[in-house]
Amino acid sequence: MEGCTIIEFILLVIAYFIGLILLGIYAHKRTKKTAQDYFLANRTFGPVILFFTLAATNFSAFTFLGFAGKAYDSGFGQYGIMAFGTAIMAVMFYVIGRKVWKLGKEKGYITPPELIGDRFNSTSLRLLFMGVMVVFTIPYLATQAIGAGMLIESVTGASIGWQIGAIFTMFVIMIYVIFGGMRGSGWTDVIQGVLMISALTLAVVFIAINLGGFEAANTMAYNASPELFTRPGGGDFFMPMMWFSFMLLWIFADPMFPQIFSRFYTAKDEKSLKQSMILYPIVVSFLFLCPVLIGIWAHGVGLDVSGQKDMVLPMMVANYAPGFVYAFVMVGALAALMSTADSQLLSLSTMLSHDLPFKKRKISEINIGRMLIVILSLFAILFVITSYNPREGIMGTLVKTTFSGLAVLCPTTIAALYWKRATKYGCIASILIGETSVFIFQYNILPTFGLLSAIWAIIIAIIVLIVVSYLTKAK
Amino acid sequence: GLWWRQSEPLMFGLPFWVVYLLILTLITSVAFYLFSKYYW
Image 1 (cartoon, rainbow over the protein chains, first blue to last red):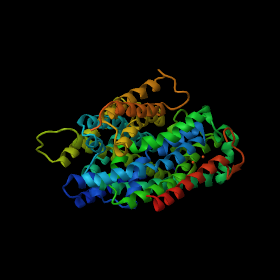
Image 2: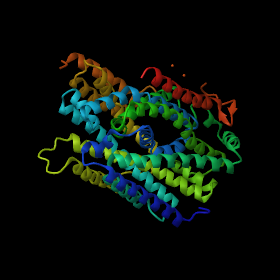
Image 3: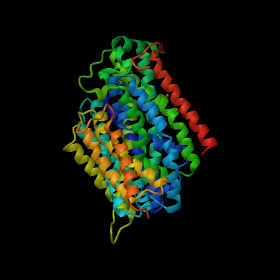
Image 4: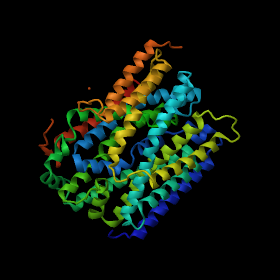
């Protein structure tokens, strides 16, 4: 690390962590002792905070590490599916977000399962919806912590092991989420979002300058690996059916992440949702190009990633940018990880404290939420220490489980918001059979004909929802 | 309402279809603006 020592990097990270904790404590002072205020910031997020909290929550470990790793493998196709796919997904801010916001404001809903359960007057559907969200979000939370640990290990030359780094990061997140609740999470998301965007931009600019300019860097990569500039790309990954699958997947999957769904409740007004929808494509159009370019440029310079594709971005920045840029980019990457993890932690604890049928509560819902934040953090740390294999590609792990599993909830959500004839039995059958089909297609028990298993699972969930709803009686 | 196995011509060193998708993404933002102004 030229121009920046390991000690300086550690001091920068500590200063950043202290800043987040102080912001969490300040948010705590501004938060009233009501569940609405602690869990939803009293539904007061204006356009700027709402946009940044949605974006920073949505763009996670693989925006930094996974994108670059996948682009190193498969080429520019990664930009297409991520940038346009995520941009068109913002139409769901209208289809789902607007309705969720209105119902939340009218009926005081706090969690996604609460809205679904109340619409069908069904506790079993509410618990099933919550169960799916929790089961598919906890591994994703652990992945963020692992990503942070890997980054810290990489920067410090293994002076700090990835497990220690992951545990320390998780501990800091736990502290500022306990204090600040949704307001703290939203405010820190603004800082982390700005950090993330500036870090990626700086990384591309400095690497391009070092490689003789933007066009020269691309030309070097084109001469070394021309297959990355076409589709299907490296390893023939982006076949037409796969391309179609990814373009469709984000529309159904992204709004179903509990941390994204919950943020629809926090909007101050519809104007905030509208402006977030308009800004989303503008930001992703250039932001997602940055890690993809860096991953592809690695071929032009003959970088040896030796099996660690997810670390191609830090390696490129370390080799082709000044030390201070490297340190800043690494803090930006940590910001991307932490802004997703804190939102997941808060949304999980909100659901578990609000949707589980606790009886005879002697302590307030906020304090139950805080205890759950501690328990979930320890659970994620346990994941880190024991069972998770951090050497697997992050993107592969996520797409295999989380996105498909959550996308199955989308037909039920749309039916709850729009379709009067839908029944709770239709929704329960749709979720159960949809989730089963995720694994049936995932393990090739049935052929997918080149599509992602998630697409088949969504189609099956829609068909089951319609058929069972018509066969059962709507109240 | 939008070139498989092609990469050239390169524009700023990028495959032309990447530039096309970048422009399409920005057009999506314009569509959202008009949608929120005239329909939502």
